[in-house]
Amino acid sequence: EASAVHRMDFSGQNLNPQVFDTSANRRAKVPLEEEDDDVVDEFDALEVFDLIRDIMDPEHPVTLEALKVLTLKNITVTGGKHVHVYFTPTVPHCSASTLIGLCLRVKLHRCLPAHFKVDVEITPGTHLQEEQVNKQLADKERVAAALENQNLLAVVHKCLLGVQEDEDAQAHAG
Image (cartoon, rainbow, N blue to C red; front, side, top):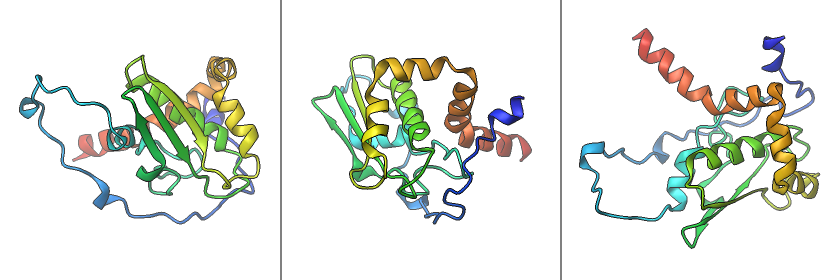
């Protein structure tokens, strides 16, 4: 049964999505010892993007960034306490849209300070059920109930950990 959790049915979806090269979009990592602890800087859109860019697509073994489901221009941070993320499904009838939004919401809630308000929505005009999906993602009770479903939670975790697991496996293999 555990293997069935990782094989959600997305039949009829975008079977061959266009994958984009994202290697040039990375900024250099600053070693921890070089960071200045006395400087307080607010989260910006790029930092938020860095938190979510490597979330895996639930249907394909690539990141949301590589599919251009996520782009930096669709993330805003205002007042140091409000993050708004628009995501763009690869096809207008994508049945994984709610799951993708849930993954984004979970990752941001885990990584951002508790005082942040997080909004995750479908980019306007890019999904046939945009209004319904956005309503589900904005409903805190529905999101909490969804995360109590262990099968769904396992799929969310798989999407959140996919790249990290691959990088860890490569590090141990080499």
